[in-house]
Length: 569
Image (cartoon, rainbow, N blue to C red; front, side, top):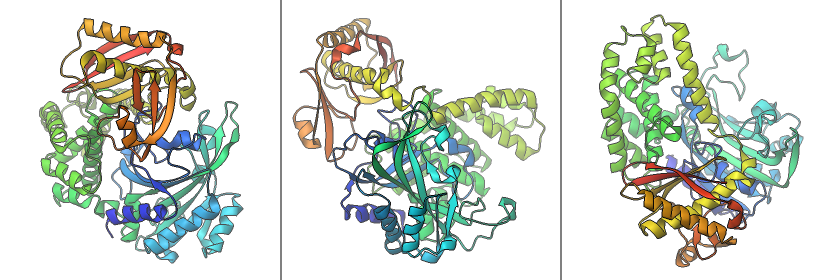
């Protein structure tokens, strides 16, 4: 069975049970300043899990694009990837365990045809309700395993004591597929079990019972409504349905693997395959290589792939990029950015890094790890890998200093570059989010209707707004824009919200994020007669509370795209 069929079966299964399909959110979250990437299916739905009514109702289903930077170092085995699709269904205060667990069991065993004898389940210790439901479905007692919060509790931050204030989470119940052709490796423990890392078991489904929120004093309180947050990796489900423990041998990877050629180290080929796919998907959402934030992670992926391809005796080719695009031909993932832009961007990176890469590889045995990193621009973990492969000694003190700098940057990127978290949404970031709408309207009024939003990022300290415009803004233009925004702040415009269809929203003149796919029902925020825009929120109730708007900086964000940094006080 191919991945597209698994995806379609999942969506149709839950639509038949009253769920409404929503489109995948972008890989770069528009309204969440606490993280660089959408790393889980629930991330775009956090406001609704916390109690805000969803415009499409209480039953939702989708396939969400995800990227996890913290998984970069794990890539190379048969199951870890940085980019993946998460099949998800949600109950927003509607059904709970008694409906969710039987539905997932039915989907896995009947729709996908997975043999029941190959399936094992896990629950949080003490969750006898879930244990009894699984027993009632015919799962033998010996195939039901209980673990602590380190294995069977889910939140974006991990177990309860790691959750920040305001974060939702809850116990979960997972389903594992057993690959009987894989023999247990004793180095992972005397006894094999579903959470063993030997490769015999693979988690394919996780039903999270999202019913708690972290308080400032460290305790958990029950949410007003109990939610279900299900996540199942498309790559892993496809591997299970084809009884192949290697996700890189599913149709989600084989076209790109074929474009690499069949020779060379398996681990290196998996790394290239994963990194090129992830890089292409990032660029499809408008990310460009840089030395900051999402662009830094993208550049790291591309350069590591280039180093590995050099070791394999080749280079990153247009054929590889085409293979990724063709793999996702039935989706709308490349609606915003086309293949031409992606090929051009990678070619530019190759031009910047290619010469130093070739020189560095020639001199790999004659220069220090520090020089490879600083002079030749090699990613630090690639430098470490090369010296391990060559069996050469490292200047550990100097190398570790540079490595620690790099790891700290990576940890910061993975965890989120900005302080605050969910609690921020009621304060400074909410004001700046509203100011972004005023800025967008002012740009169109001063510069012209060709201005389209190309991306935004908001922290507690400032907003960043990317927009289409062919030239650097003059000081006079920037002054006019700031004055116009401040006039509409001083006017204390009321901010109102309406829920309507996307077509209705466009008809009444609401601005939309260019190229984005929207659900059937959307929220439209209106600020007097000045601004009307489709948005997920949050916003203040009146513009007067914003105080004073100030533009900090204006710069290029790529060909035909400008970027403004601004703040309110």
